[in-house]
Length: 234
Length: 294
Image (cartoon, rainbow over all chains, first blue to last red; front, top):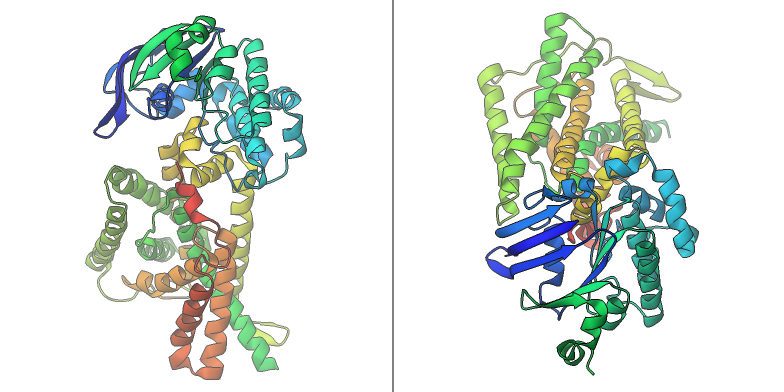
């Protein structure tokens, strides 16, 4: 579904990713784990079209999207739920969710999608008419995920969904990601919370200093000595 | 008492005038984050166009809005697309400010070249006739400006909150990067918003032209007050600009009578400074900085 071949990418003169290649197949849950600054978020931002790679190729469903603008990538069916939630602070929760359905393919069905999404997030339903900025961090993360789902994406990408959340909320977030995957949506997650994420994934990639150091089935990575020492502290 | 009521009426009418000129300015700032120093010259261009059409075709000045507002929309959209947008890649945001200052100077001199230094009077079509409302007398044209300002504020609020495009505009203003992730073409929203802001001042131009003669420097005369109004109301707030305009209008009117007409501007700017010291974000200022988080 998504194929990345040897991309270099970064910010201005700083190259962060060096020759990164990875693949996500339809229906999979794939995780990119790695330390802070390894280039995990940069990878997702490059796929989303916020950063244009300086080398390599990205293709989605056979179409070259290496240089496609961010708003066009969304139209093709790739949605990124960004790190730090990035809600529209002075809009209500309902308005935030409707913005999620801005994608052309999602607009017509926005009322149905909203109903489906709210079944997954009962707390969000109670907050529909509140300003997004008045919500707690956990609630904001739920709205951010719900907003991403509103686009009815083929590939949903999560950038550090558990960052800065209380442990109980973190487990709720992973529960929701599991439910999204169960509906057949392809998922690509970037996380520092290595154990929970790999547990919920089919496959994983380990990113170190902008390069893929290791990849394989999630269970195999959980048993790998290097992963256990470097990321699980075992 | 009658004098006081008359002063209040004058102040509100003046406020309506300031409001209708300022709304486009605050709209552009709130969304595109560019202070358009050519805003006054957009007004001037619109007033000249009103004058040309009114005199040339013998139409009522208000009818010209059908041509003036679209003309200004195109001028504003082109300013964003061909002047501001190429500069977005510049390392320093201030480059955009200087670009609009340059555009302002260019437009003033272009008007001097085409129309000369003489003032041009748009036919008043009865709009300068006073009407008696209860104990106060005001000009008919002023009443229409006030009504138009109120309708413009309401119309823009409805557009921004009820339509898909309006919500997309607000989304871009509040979080540009997140808006892109929703599939919004941010560059197009900027062009559209600059156009809408300029069209608002086009509406103002057609309404103001029958009351004030137009010259190449008329923009400078009005825009200084418009900046005060916009900063006072809170940069980017449409309702704030309206309330700010009423406050400045009332202060101007009262100070002119009770303190002395020479000191009107001194009082207006004095109050402005005090409010800024007490509340730097303006009366309706929201966390403008939030919109810059990406």
